[in-house]
Image (tube, rainbow over the protein chains, first blue to last red):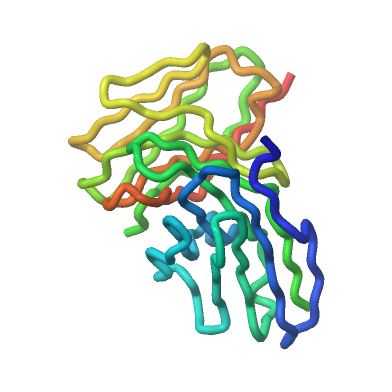
Amino acid sequence: DAGVIQSPRHEVTEMGQEVTLRCKPISGHNSLFWYRQTMMRGLELLIYFNNNVPIDDSGMPEDRFSAKMPNASFSTLKIQPSEPRDSAVYFCASSPFGGMNTEAFFGQGTRLTVV
Amino acid sequence: RKEVEQDPGPFNVPEGATVAFNCTYSNSASQSFFWYRQDCRKEPKLLMSVYSSGNEDGRFTAQLNRASQYISLLIRDSKLSDSATYLCVVKNQAGTALIFGKGTTLSVSS
């Protein structure tokens, strides 16, 4: 299994530009999570999906952030317009749905720098 | 109060030392607990689940105290390769998502 695949690995963009991060979960996993990691705030849950349906987006910081999961094998996190404070590492993770001790598997992350 | 709190460290210990990390969580209804490990500039990976009766995996021992809402991780006979950030993780009340602490950094030196 290839694991969770994220692209791009690195992204440098100018303030005001649109940024789209992509994620391919592990095949057969029903849950998908988007996290953001910074030194100041640690790993924050932004949004998660079960069976392609958004369940909780209360962690999405602002309306500038949006996430979609059009099918079981693909999800996007979009920031429009981007700001320097959005600079962080964005992780996607997937998990089989259900089971209290179910592990989440992370992608390698996208390191976003907004200048 | 943050949902999951950890001492950020860093913990600097020599090889062979025993080191313990602690974590507290705010939601008494939480049912599942984990320790994840994150190496520098890498993604978090599951180290071990934490069970109510406590559990051990080689040099690693995890314990849970539900009354105090407290989780611990003990590492015996530290190795250089144990140097990493250790993340305390609690499943949310619905049991659907993982909530992470900010992590405790361990540096093991020779």
